[in-house]
Length: 464
Image (cartoon, rainbow, N blue to C red; front, side, top):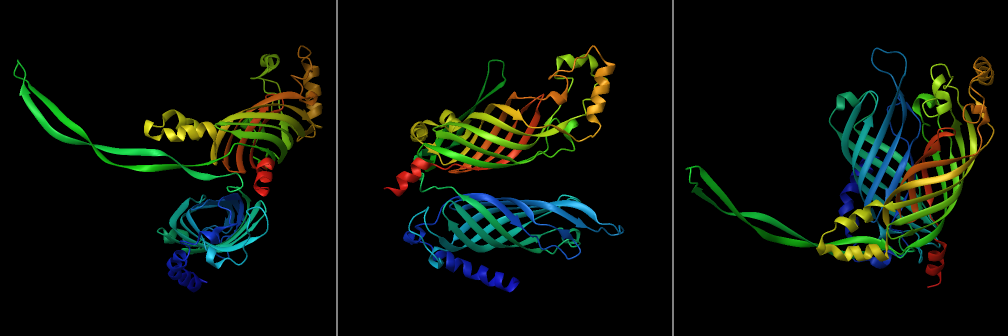
């Protein structure tokens, strides 16, 4: 395998050269995709590990992969296995070998496209416990299979790491083979009318020292004046990737993170969230309205947030909490931070980009905003089987505290929620961190992957 990798490196410049001036060979090959990836690191046989999971994003040139997972290893002098975590980050470029494509398609959302692909990355491999990191170079040959709206990407990551060899040797070699398989969403760059548009020019200048003039003041102290001037160094053309504004239907799936507040929910892992929503992306703005079904919500009653419980803060059993499933009608509104900042601080020489901001939507967007909704909880389930009896006893011993929806977790009912979110989107592919809830229904955070299906743009593309 190492000999094959060496041969491939030697042939890479030749293969890359064959890609130039063959634009017709790129027809049907999607420019952007992003999604889930799974890796199997090749540690030593005595190191136990499952598949590592993470994200894989691929642009026209840029490529990024991040995975993490658990591992079990033995340290010298310790007969028992130790538990640890590790991660791998690959950042670099990708080169699709269009001339060697095995199957080609003529449209971007119909048929199958199968082509070899090579990634060249700067790589960081870390064992977070006991705390060892190495830097290196990763060669990532593979096969890219493109289907309507989804992409399968299989790679053999061959990374060579440098430094700290003695520290790493108990776990793995300095050459690490890591097969990976990614399931990605097609960004639909071509379908959404994406294009790279010139946004303007940016002038480069620098200061040149002309002379220093020295003289004496009336009190015989020295006065110095420095004379400089600006010299033009050249200018560069700038571009931005834009697309038409669009409306969509968005299915999404989220994996819950540790619920909040931390003191109440240390043992809880919020469950998955499924949603379907309608929305749009227009200029700097975004908006969604959808229906969500979530598992792993939890109800809590913290005296610091509830006025009726504050006199009983020292004795109220606030550590009692319960989990439930929930159905929520929820809306979101936000802004594209990158486009907004560009529109505010962009210099006059790049005013062309501002006009694009008023008429177009950026293909790559970093968005954030606020959300609000109404959550209907399902049946509450306590982790502690004796929780209900403890609450009965507490309310019986404190007759001044009535059992109401605000004071008794068992009476959890529908309620309004609010929250914050941030998105990173590549055309139709969306990655989101979400945090929302209230002090009665608890707080819920999740990482979500969504797909914005632009029905109108798809129809326009097919009928052109």
